[in-house]
Image (cartoon, helix red, strand yellow):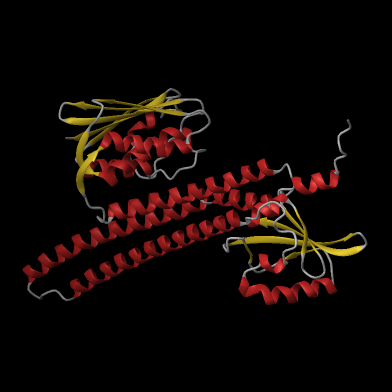
Length: 417
């Protein structure tokens, strides 16, 4: 018994990942592939016979009828919604952003309109995330500028005090000396602030260029991969965009954390913390950014350790150390986290099998903006360990490390019980 012949056009129609609708001159759907049904939340063949306006948000239906009639009078291949946002309406009434391309085809001698529809929800999310990162950068730069103005004003005020000193020689000398001390301090702070601003601009122009270029390139390339069989390429570029946004966010977080620490805006909020459970949660969270076949192994002695500490600061310390271990280690390597009670301290060790730190540069490890010469090709601000050191100091703890080039690094954090 012979198998029924398979219509190759029907097979291609159903295999397309894009939603495809065939609409007659009355605006009635006469054909819809499975991708269309999934896109709009309908069961198989449930869309046949529906008005195309039923897939349009209610507020736009009257306008859509006019657009459809205009297209019927002057049909040509085109993208709908150029320069404006389009939305589709699902069976359950929810709306989502779409991109639509139109074309004409004759079916049994009668003109019909073909609509090719894709869901651009992820693209919209990426656009929002990019805009948010840009806004954060602008806000932080503005804050730096305000601080420079404030320091300059402080200096001007000090100089004015000198001009108003008492004619009495002894008081004049005393006031002048104080003013000179204040002036030197203000100048020192202003130089430091100017240096920070200069380093920030330099770092931002360098570190932001690569992820922003990657995001722009991948966003452009995604538009090209809309044919069946290109899903893996689309996913690859979407992952690149997500990674770029994550890098931008990390850079901004480093600068904001440093700013808060230096301005004394970070306060200790002690509570009883099960740091064993907290560490497990942190490891689970960071496992998602591990490289291919990288693993994080955790060992605690005793099994449960409770500590009175600031939970948020403790988490920031461990996230930073583990993120560095992941970043500076190769795929298929192991990262070890060990926790134990040592004398009157809780000791936590984070060990990687990464590139290590050159011995001659280890003395600069916790300095602001320091990057080892063998790490210049890996994205980073050089602020992470400086921030970690400040956080450990706030908890009255102590941090040390040992490292060997090309063999790995161990950071040891001791926190008092």
